[in-house]
Image (cartoon, rainbow, N blue to C red; front, top):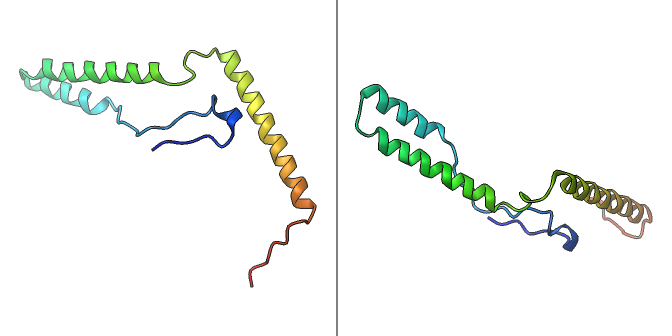
Length: 107
């Protein structure tokens, strides 16, 4: 699933949501502990699964938009976007109060 920005100015700050993957490590850790309790030979295989899953998570984090942006710049962008929302809400309220729109009431 992808999310498209509503405004051109917000395109850089709006994250694109892709199909969510499961990065829960608990099931793999549980399997590792079970193998260790049984003294099973599959411990190394389970450890490799965990290592692979951690590497995939690292790659996903590195690919996320905005990771390379400094916290100060992120705060600045957030303030700017909040101001845009505030301004647009004020304009919306202003236009609603002009009574130019005849909104039929449900009967």
